[in-house]
Length: 121
Image 1 (tube, rainbow, N blue to C red):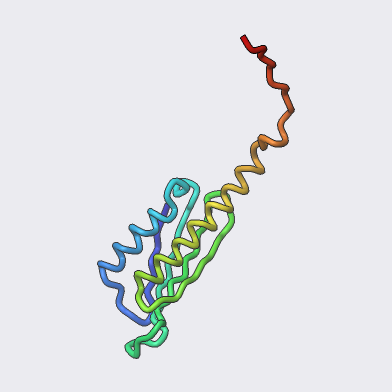
Image 2: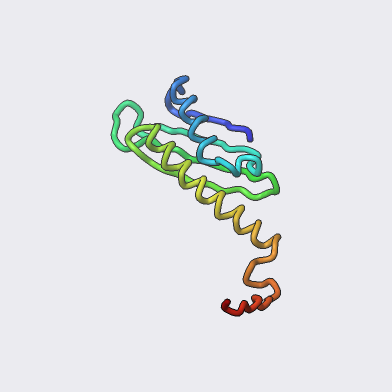
């Protein structure tokens, strides 16, 4: 899984870069082998004026095609990153879970087999 981080209208610190990489790996978790690339775009809309204007946009490209996106806004970059990656992680889990169920047979659609009857002793 490749992680790309882009900063707009501010200088990306090493601390923030480390936070984004760590949280991305955590959010993708056990599904990271099925994720090709995660791009995290960070933007400070108001610049030095402050306020709830820190935006994190996450784009996830899956190994077998498909792309998912999520976005969050917060007063701090770590907060926006955490929320956007949490949403992206849930979306990836749902998308890959859905594709996995379509590839394999469901328990409900399999052939019905009667259980053996045991007589009490």
